[in-house]
Amino acid sequence: MIYIMFTRDLTIGLLIITNMKITPEWLASTFHDTYETLAPMYGYETREDTKEFDAKSKNGRLMIKTCELVIAQLEGELKDYDYNPK
Image (cartoon, rainbow, N blue to C red):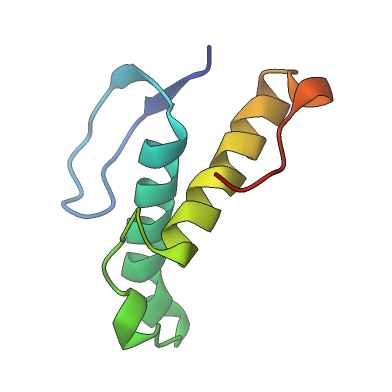
């Protein structure tokens, strides 16, 4: 299992200390939302049709699968990793 400690929430700027299990869905959604928040600060305009995370879209499924791979790498379980789309 992978647990992560957060020290601040980018959206509202409050200090938070919590431990939680990382799931591919949570990581993909959080990455997306953080990316959308930071993009304008870096002069980047994201696509209108992807501003909201949709786990059932092709992009959402790809992001979730990618996060599954990252988690597997962090947990040292990559040797039997399933690269096939579901």
